[in-house]
Image 1 (cartoon, rainbow, N blue to C red):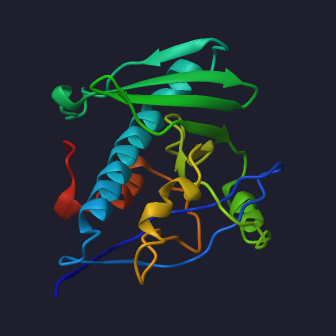
Image 2 (image 1 turned 180 degrees about the vertical axis):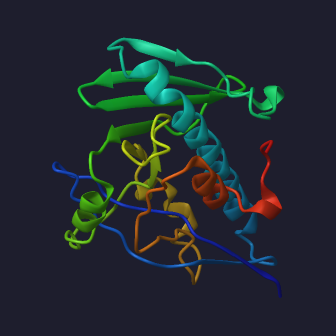
Length: 205
């Protein structure tokens, strides 16, 4: 019996950037009757990470100065496959951006992006709230102008874990996995390597 394991980040964002995260690992048996569903979930997760990379490069550049809905062009100039382009729309509300990601005219999970001033402070607060129930999936990434680490950004899908319940209630193992810590990256290279390890990257170098 073969097994595959991977991690995803999870947290719950409250006013003041209070968050909660737990730790587990996804263990999917290849002969598991729910493998197909797990694979679908894994594919959606990867699409989300494609979108996050777009947001890293495009959000601060195009949406930071606008209050209206802004189209962020497909990410193709860095080796992104134009036939699999993701269109990203961002609407600014204060320091928060509502982000929609579409691929082949299909809407992926909506995202909310919030700029934070101090990544270490954010991560510290993430460890303080441990009494919440269902939590949205999220990752912490840096903005397009933040190779120096000055402008970290939090990207959070609006969908909550209960919408993925099919992956956790029908089997002896939870199909939803969490990380016990959040990360901020000082350079995009570090972020890219985390999103796509070298052996599986689909982006141009």
